[in-house]
Amino acid sequence: MKTKTHYTRIIYWSDEDGKYLGRLPELTPYPCVSGQTVEEVNSELDQAEEALLDALGDDLPARGIRVVVPGSRRNWIVKNKVAKLRQSLDMGQKEFAALLGTSISTLKKWESGERTPSGAAAKLLEVLERNPDAVLTK
Image (tube, rainbow, N blue to C red; front, side, top):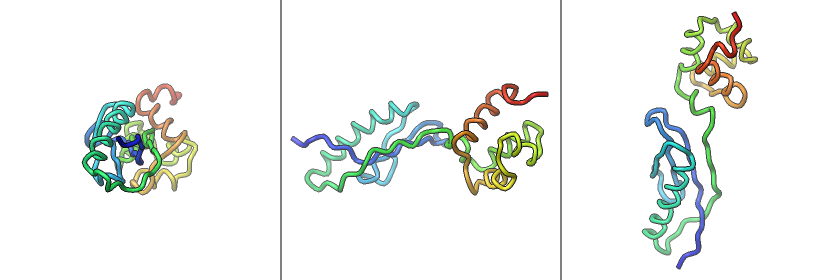
């Protein structure tokens, strides 16, 4: 019987599928499971890993580390989503950048899809998207 080993796990949000996808990159190049929560996908990856290891037999690839990549960035990867939010709030780039506490240059990169917001900026964008009145004062 094989000892339980964990290979690298990549869990990420797919806007196209509307759910989390999970991969075991050392075992297969494609997403092999999906689910509505990170926990659900991680559990499914346990089963997929076991099945793939059984199928591979003794020809096992090198082990990696466990990686989970969820988070706020996933919502802002879609090109133009930041721009659409700004426009829906009827704000110019200068005003919106000031509200977010970032430079106009960074905002333009987010809007073009060249970069994605992370950390506090991504959280603030989520709040603005869900409840603009919580942030905006008029």
